[in-house]
Length: 124
Image (cartoon, rainbow, N blue to C red; front, side, top):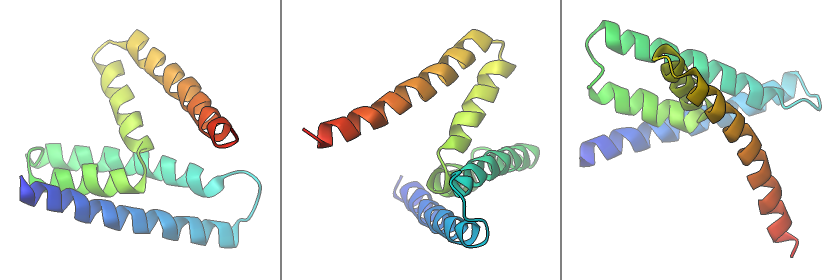
């Protein structure tokens, strides 16, 4: 258990650093009003989690410490959007399209409302 927590923490720290560096580099070379750094981070994170899950499954490493380090740790620290993308693909592949689309709609709608509410509460 302690080793797993360490692997997740180490991966998360590295993922967070990479997220910060991605933002610095993207905003330096492509400054604009569109949140390009976050968008690219989320899309790359989705691609990366797909690669990692596929590689781990192909090499029978799905239950290894590499899963905790790379998926939960690194990808979790880099972007939680990758987990969101993966969970929806799993729902779609298991013929739960209605649940997937409800999850997508609710996550976006409730997430935006939660941000708005958090901002609202700080102004009270």
